[in-house]
Each structure stands twice: as structure tokens, then as C-alpha cells.
Image (cartoon, rainbow, N blue to C red; front, side, top):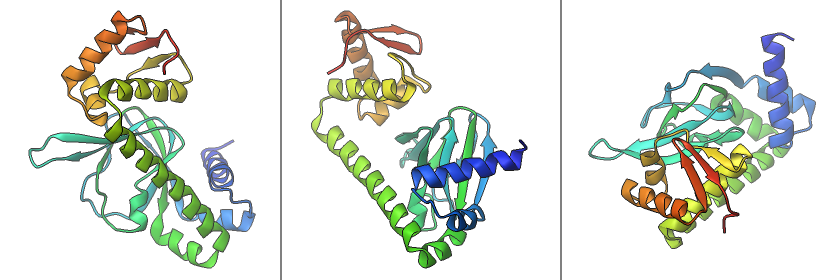
Length: 220
């Protein structure tokens, strides 16, 4: 099976499984707006305030989304995981509000919105499925903001470990980004992150070995 055949199969699976599109004619039209690209660890996909027209879907790997504040410091917005859309804000504007950088070697699907829009206008099923998908995404982000506002630092730490455990399908999770960046994502200082980590180790809830954290007890 050659490269183009593999890419075609990947795109078909995405639209059938993720978007629920079953019409083969619509899938064929969608394929004309898509492309697959590979990126090495540490590469910048797009930069904050860049103009663009491409929405992305992560087929494999992990990506960091961040903004720079007035002092030039990174503010982590989100870590993108496999089978997740990002930069979908370009459906409503032409500028990327964040910078996207690969944390591992990645495979990314790009969707050109300028080619996608005519299809949305002419195919109701496709439009409704995409609206539903992004509505779920918005609900997820709202829930995340709510958790950050009402949970204390320890709860945020434990919930993040739970999240990593589900994503990595293991009770031993690997932190593939610096702890300082995770602390920023969770809305806490690095010192707070370290203090909570040490307390959980002391309580026998987790074991820490470099970038690995083993969850020894079922987390609340």
C-alpha cells in the first residue's frame, strides 16, 4: 500500500468515524481540501498572529499551544493529543491566536477552510456534523475553565494525572513536557506543583522517577 493510499484511508476513517459522514461523494469532495504533513519534534506549525486558512487534526504525536504575554513569557493554552482538532478558530477568523509547536514527531492532517466552506454551504449533513463536533469542543473548554476556577491546586494536579492516565492508557504516566509548563497549564506556580507532588509521594499516592509518575492509588 503506497503513501497516497494510506493517506486516503486515514482521511476516510477520520470523516466516517469522527465526523459521522457516510456519504462517499461528500468524503471524496472533502479529500480535495485535505493534506497530510509530517513534522519533527520542536517544529513550529504556525505562530501567534500569523494569517492562515488551515485547520488541523492531529493524527499522531503531541502538540503544545501557547501565547506570549507582554513580557515574552509563554502562557500554555493547551496540549493537543492524538485524534484532536486544533486551530478550528480559523472557521471564524483568518489569524492564529496562538503558536503551535510539536512536542514529539507528529503526523498532521490539514484542512483548507477556503475549500471546505463551499462544501459546508452545499451539504447540510456535513455542516450539522461539524457544528455538533465543535459544540462538544466548546463544552469541553468551558468545563476546563470552570474546573480551573473552582478546584484547588491539588485537585487540578490529580485531575491532570487522571487525564494523562486515560490518554496514555497506563497507571504510569510520562510527562513529555517540563513540569514548569504543566504548572502554567494548571494555573499554579512551579513551586506549588513541586510541593503537591512531594506531598502525594509522601502520602503514598504516587511514585516519581524523573519524567514518570506511577499512580499507586485510585485517584479521587
